[in-house]
Image: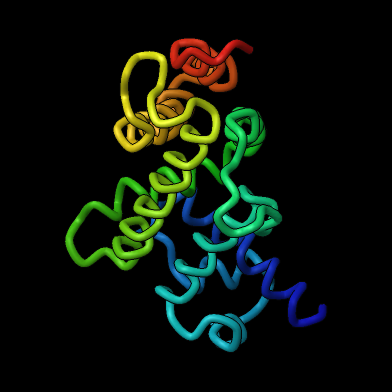
Length: 187
């Protein structure tokens, strides 16, 4: 197996193990075993558990954004957010891993805390840019894009938790489309 293929296999295995056990319960040996390599072989690619964690989180974001196909500073149309929610509804393991890590990261000194802190700063700014591109400086309800951005992000993440807990009762894509209607954007 080529180096980049092996690295991708390790990331997929880490995603699965973290989804099953959470970050604290995941071990490098469990990830290595799932890939079919030794722990020493895994350490060749990721020298620490923290390095593997950051790589998993960065890979998840790259999958979500299509690897950064958008130009820097170019806002995502709200339809793309809707598509992302639909895409996530097909990736239970990825959503589960992200949600487990997000929940754990609120504890002091968790290795993912800085990643999520910086990520949410960037995600809120990107959401505000998207809302401004769609509605201008005021949304139909009177909020500014900066006031509405944390709400948009909170709905997306909150829907994921609800869907993970009761997928039969929560239709993430439909609920997100309802939010867009509530914001004043016709679907």
